[in-house]
Length: 494
Image (cartoon, rainbow, N blue to C red):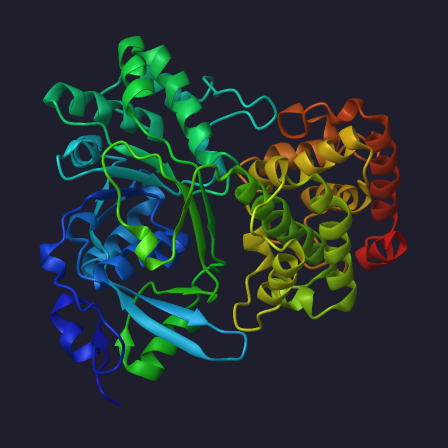
């Protein structure tokens, strides 16, 4: 067997005989985009779009410098440094076709958890025009019920007292914006690419809340000078597995320590609200619109909520992946009933969108047998996701007198999931949630207080006061605790 080829700049010419590689001169790229949170989604989405634009030959000022603010970012930093920022994107089509290519838009990576000055200096560099974010819902540090900034966060308290030693994204942004202002440089755009409704507005509101407490004069400058475009992003990107790494080695003889897999579908809708220029992403299929809110609400309430419906119910049943759920006719029927009867009626008016076709496409994407997105990934950080994806739909339907049945069963199942941590066959469920202990503590009281789980105001808001919801929830949660065969309960509701 031939010696494997390590993925790096030196070996690109040799690798190009096996795989498509960047045709542009990466040495000419400047880091116009500083991106915080270099996970699989960023590399399958924004970095991919940026690569496509650079392939057109007119985007040298829009290279990406990745940023990690947490100790946990060390591994991706080390891999990308070793590979000169290069990685392979593996696109898995439903028919079994696989397209792979080497992506070259990331040209640097810096860590900030021990040396914050390195990150602040990069954000404040004259080349930087956009600071973009994929920091997950939890990284925005707001109370999901009230929407208020969480000043009780110990890292926030630290950086308010020590502005030159930031810990959270807000400390880094304010330090960098202040430095740019003092240097006479224009403000960069802060561009959220996370699955949060009104993500630009939320980022702006949270940053201003923090800055007002730290430095009111700087907050006034941010309010006046910094752009925060809202955006809607979409591409299903499962966690990379050893099988993906092995596939590249066995098929192409290429050693990539952290490739990314994804589906063929990709979408990005952005408000054209940038403070210091932007890439011409419209040349590679990105849609710029005056108001992204109806589109992001559609995606959050159908795709993201639909994922959670399948993920939580599927976890209790014992389905390991989302496509396995979609091979189960009952799950398909239940998902479509939720989308048609509960999610669709509370969406805003959408120009140019055929909702029936969109929902059909979601079912096809979820069923892609070559994606194999784990239910544990989909259920991860549900405490941050569900208030925006699913609980908001329940609240809207309560206000309008609509159906809440399908979503309420998911909440009841989430309680059982958080309490027992096992599927109906007694197998352990992998639970990934920053508030896992809090969720378990509340859920474990269900036998003595059926409403204990939904008394968590930070997650459920005032739902505890909605008799229509509490009555249905209490009935469903007790049924699940009596018999954990979730398909029996799903069948009764359809």
